[in-house]
Structures are given as structure tokens and as C-alpha cells.
Image (cartoon, rainbow, N blue to C red):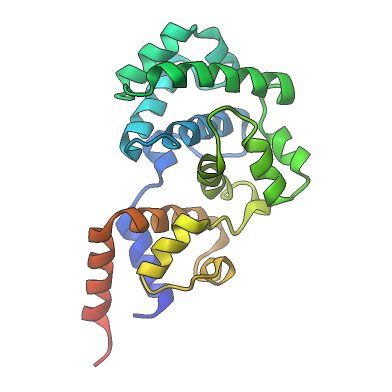
Length: 219
């Protein structure tokens, strides 16, 4: 199986991205970008990704789907939403940080993270640096945001970070972001990056894809 076919199998195996699982329709709009930032914040903790997904969905359902909506909720309401979404162990600190993030988003960008992209002037490293000004968003959180946001912020492409490259290595795929990006349509690069991270974390997925490769390889 060639690299392009293996990538197609990988993306199909992974299915939806984390943002899609959280009900976020990635778009270059203020609400969706804020929701992605919340998800990136939650997934940065040492917690299972599916719990970050349910925690984000619960926050949005409670009214925190925009920075302004998040600020309208008090600390207890944010905490309750996190707990309702199974995000229990870090609920106290996360409820505080999300309020701080919402205040920063409002004060610096008028609640519109597209202005963050504009402030970065098309520079991926500057984008990641600005993201890390948000409490709770470190390098891993910024990488998580950029993996998904490259679907609508082309200047981030190829956002294939070290964790995704680990997945690529385990699958026998190129270890160069540009080479990986050449294997998919640009509009699907975020799906590939997300799937590679899952492969890095899921040995069973890697085994299934490699077994498929062996079965379909020419004799």
C-alpha cells in the first residue's frame, strides 16, 4: 500500500476530528473559534480526549459558546457545566481559567479570534505564541488548536506537530510535515493531523492499518 492509500485508510479509520465530536463545525467565525479554543484548553490537561470533548459540549450547551456567553456564566455555573460533561478532576481550576480566557478574548480581540490571526500577520509561530497567552494553553494546547484551525486558517498549514509526526513514524509515513501535506487535499489536512495524533496514542489503530497494508500489498 502506498503512502497516499495508507493515509486514506488512516483518515477513514479515525473518523471525525475531536472538534467535530464536540459538535464544533470548524469555520472562520468567532463562536466556532472560541469553542475550539475551549476544547484545546480542556484537552491540554492530563485527561482522556473524550472527556475533553464532552466537557466542551456541555459548556457550549450551558451558554459558553462565545467569550461573552462564558463571562455571563459565573464560576459555579462553569464548574457545574464541566462536571455535567464528566470533566470532574480539573473542574475548579478550569472554570477559573475559562473565565480568564474569555476576558482576554473580549479585551484583546473583541471576542473575535480572527483578530488574533490578523495580529499574527500570517506567521504560524506568532499565532502559537498569541494562543499561549491564554491561561491553560501551553505548547500542546496551541498545537491542538492549530491542527484543527488550519482547516480555515491556511497560513497555519502544514500544522503537523511532534505528536502527529510520532503517529506518522509508527505508520511508516513521511516524517516531514510538507511531505505529509502533499498526500491529502489541503482542505483535509486537519483531518490527517488529527488522525496521526490518534495513531500516536492508539497502538491498536496502528496495528489495524499496518495489517491492512500487508493484506493489500502486491505479491
